[in-house]
Amino acid sequence: MSVKTIDIELAIMREMKFLQNVIVPNISEMTGFLHFETDMVVLSKHGYATGFEIKVSKSDLKADFKKDQHVRVNDLLKGEYWFKWYYGKFKYFYYAVPECLLEDTLKLVPDTFGVYYLNEYNRLTMARPSRELFRYKWTDNERKNLMRLGVMRIYTLKKSLAKLSS
Image (cartoon, rainbow, N blue to C red; front, side, top):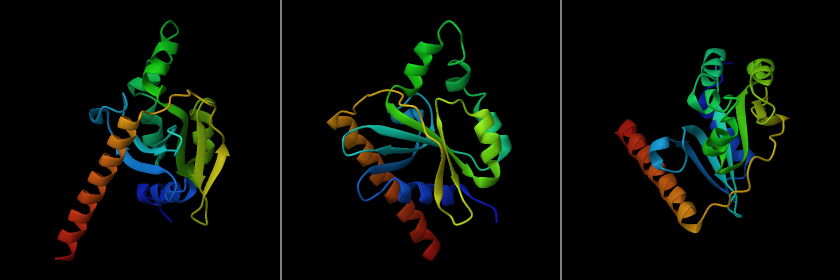
């Protein structure tokens, strides 16, 4: 069975308790929340964020480590600065992959980040926990804006569904 990004997104939403937390997909740099694009942000009721990067192919996984947030973090002189620049708003950060990519993911992803995989029963399973990155607490205004972005995502989805059904 071929796992799609949407399968992992739904599993993350179930595992991260979408009834208790604010969960918004596709956060780009242009939203002003982060300095890079990530596939999903989970904001706890206490204001701490967990980020998810979803990968469904080995080539996509490998390509991710050519992006600025990884290249700059590996800079020996300024790596610590860049790490905080990119990941400073996250308490935890995970990669989420299909089970068939688990071994490669554990080898490629730095120990700083956690790894989840979608198992054969369509359940998200933690393979490795994330280290605590930062204790940045999102402001009320940031939380409100993230929720607004989530509503905009719902509107866009509903609009697409309406077009499909007509």
